[in-house]
Image (cartoon, rainbow, N blue to C red; front, side):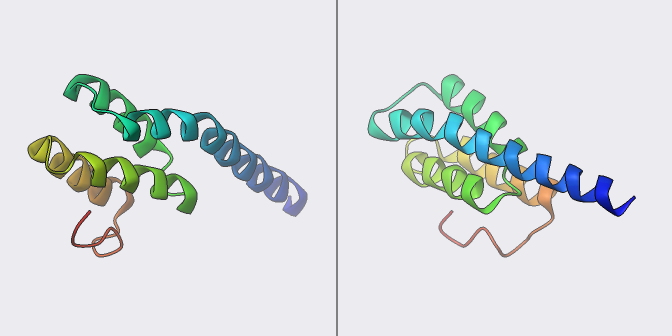
Length: 96
């Protein structure tokens, strides 16, 4: 039983690493230019699913910081979604 739990935990770690490697270039691209609110929302939806991981949360924050003043209502809704989904009221920070 303990072996199975360890294997599942290791698979989760590997999944988060794969997600980071996949989304890093997308975040870099979106952060280097301005995209539509629709495209931004799609990316944030995907990042939100993995935002329990510290590195993925870093990507999520990077995108939010970039677009906070461009699409403020959109970003505020994603900050709220993060807090609701992951239950961490104060970890996100005041400025996104």
